[in-house]
Length: 141
Image (cartoon, rainbow, N blue to C red; front, side, top):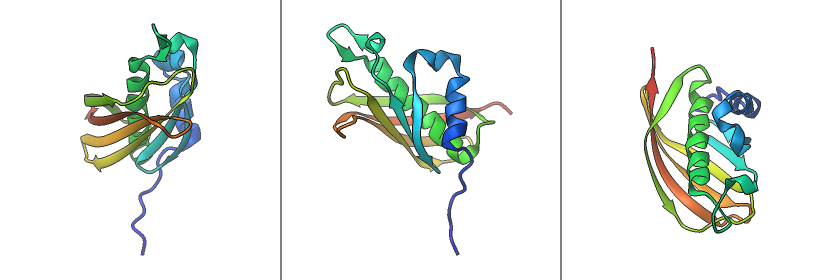
C-alpha cells in the first residue's frame, strides 16, 4: 500500500500558468521540473533584471521564490484555486552576476487554507544565493 500524493499540475500546465500571468512576463520564468509539493523554477539571465552594480536584483530572486512556491502549491491543489503570499522572509547569501537563477520551492505543511514552505535560489553551479521561508493563504470561495 502506497501513500503517494497525486500530482495535480504538470510542468506543462505550470508553464501555461506562467505564460498567462502577464505580471510575470518581464522575468522570463519557466518551470524546469515539479513533483507533488515541489517546483523548480528557472530565471534566465537578463540585463534588464540587474540592479546598479551588475548583480541580479533582490526583487527578482524574491519573486522567483514567491512564484515557485505558488506553483508548488498547484502541484498538490491544482490550478483552479487562488492563493496569495501572507509572509516571506529572505536571507540573501551570495549575489548572482550574469547567470541564470534556479529556485526550488518545497511545501513543508499543506493545510486547507494555509501553506508553509521554503525556497532556495541557487546559481547553475549549485551555489546558494538566497534562502526563503514563505507562507501562503487560500482566498476566495
